[in-house]
Image (cartoon, rainbow, N blue to C red; front, side):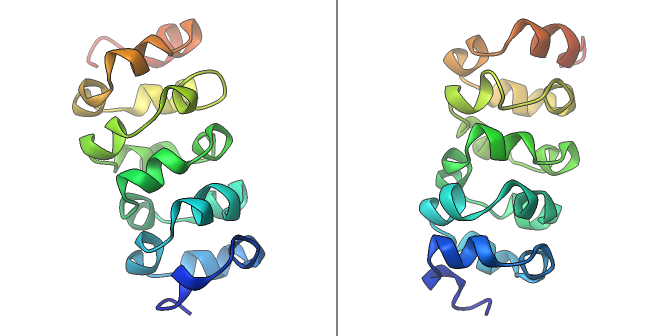
Length: 136
């Protein structure tokens, strides 16, 4: 299954169990296209991804995540993203229901620095007051 996962339809991706998703190799996860990510992966499946799987997503895949999906990524998984991956986050993903205050608080200094000024301007007052700390 892992070598052919890039050929799956979004419905087939959505039909995989969390155990099946967790069993996919990082290469298989990295081969998912933006439609498979944004329309196929459910929030529950996304939460089942390991830190290595999340960090294997390319910048296009990161940008394809919906704000609801992004909210389900565990803080430790988000911390594993590179600065390049974090810079791929869109203003829509950041604002409103995207990053939770806990996720914002978990970002490293390098990840915060990778956010564009436009993306930073989309942080809510709660994300700033409850998420950011003096070391970020």
